[in-house]
Image 1: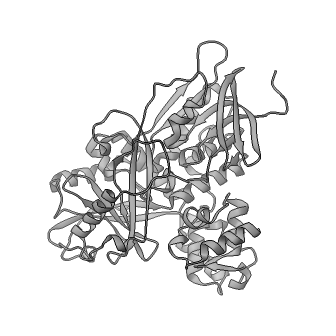
Image 2: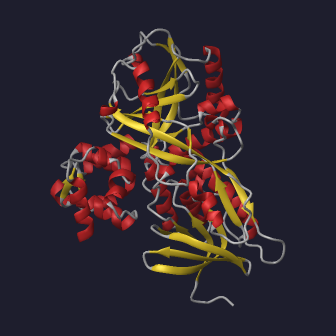
Image 3: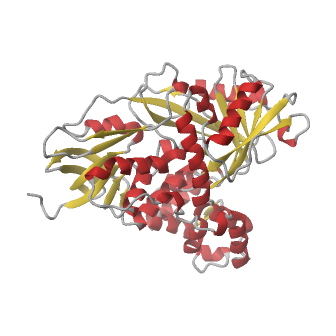
Length: 502
């Protein structure tokens, strides 16, 4: 008989990346009881190490991933509408003068890209002459033409946090720094041992959802009596951040002779983000870092395309993430499917069915649809729950009239005329309409508490600790924000001291 003191939930979700947070949000909004555990901070690994794009994946058309691209393009429009503070349109310039693909092939791909997903908000593809358009400024070769198409930018780690926040506001419990130790089937459910800051405890769950990203196989190994015949292929993607390579707010899609592509994207005002790579990862899942070979590859790419020459000493930051792709046995890491696979394990035949859903692969762009599909897979094993609801429901801070960020910002600046416009823009981008909760009654900078450096004030730190599960300086400077690229020397120590005192 179950110990009545034990906690019991419908779903125990392991993993606080975009898929785990998205599933938690969807399930909690249907009235299900949810506990999400994450062994580190939210978005600690893959979900904060992306190229920061909400996109259909133009290059996936080359590998025949039409279903994935179509779904991603449809989701691109939906996400832009529900999170206009952290997602916004971005134009991409695709020069043809160094392309290994003929122009007709690229144009055909872009035609499909424009029409597969029922594009509504974003402009369609157009053609420019590089020597006549300002969009060609900064390129070392401005001959010939380029295509200009549209996708969206996203603050990836904030997307994760906002999904977790909405899940919590619908009743889910989000526990970071909490690890699944083991789990076993019993009595038609799961008995799981988890370890957090309070030590070990036992949780009963009707269903176990394994959304642990690169650790998906590792988590399967911590369960008893589950299938072990599914494989994950780990691929490392790395990025560098360098001083601004060109003027303008457009991005470039750069084609290399090996047919791989590299993006160059405006980043944090003063920088350009360059990536990504595709390198097989054969070690155990861990915190990844860029290799010397990847650094050289990215630098060689931008030096071939841009007038400004950049060396290793110019790199201000780099990051790398491991993508947990479903092992479809493709020979080339770049060709491995980015589509997600939902693997449902209901256990041996008999009365003790206890479902475990393992998530392989996936993209940030399709996380919301993945969550819907996950709940559909699990529906036969759940008590009565609500239906699909997230497609039109704004994420926290995204409930702006007509999803118009600039109008919202102008109203905010009118309400707080003394606060610096640049600070208000950054806060509005990060928190949207929730910025009112952060600012409270503050009207001046002095009202925001101690200045911890680089425009980070005590009021924001207090909000992040109270509302968004932030614990450390890294949580705040590199996941809840990218202020780590802007703050002066000594801010990390000052912020750590502030957090410890609080």
